[in-house]
Image 1 (cartoon, rainbow, N blue to C red):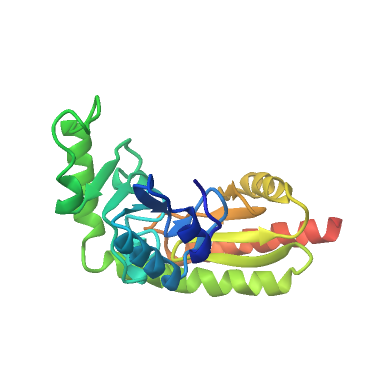
Image 2: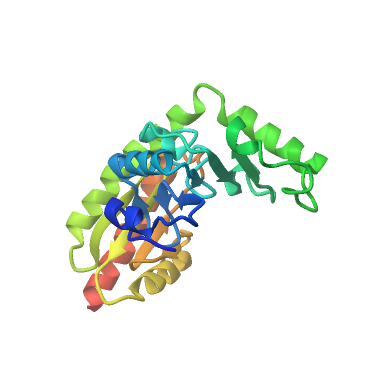
Length: 239
């Protein structure tokens, strides 16, 4: 059962005697880069506790330092019972993990939760190496510093190109530029940016998703902003 994003009343109305858990992304990705309000996540935590449900967070895309904290839910002060992580955990190598509190993991006995390739020594070595880097004291500070450089630059682009850009959403280095129009303009912009040498990804809500490497540097941020400005100006001139 799905409830409207950010609507606690809708989430409460969806709970029945058959409900086992509540699942949410602290920052949505594919559906459009949308940051869950802290009050919404806190409300879901309260609902889960009130009805004895598990609260599950999908941090496959927004976790592993992407928002400037190791886990995106840290911004809200809410902790889940179960959390899915992947993508950044392997820094390109295919690996995922299901993290759980002791209480939630108690039900995951041998034979009830497993994978064909679970615990691959190579995947575990890669994840271990990635964690060594991400957990360095300066690493997340660098992510936040680059976000502090990129975010204002994107806001200036939105103000400079109102005929093309409708808004900016996201947190840290997980950002979405929402385009004007009825939909599909984001795919066109993604293609134009790729031809200029900048890789972006389309997302729901007619957004162009910006997911730069967490090790991005000042010069690369500035170069990306310049390419975005160039493409926006060209699209504005054609409209």
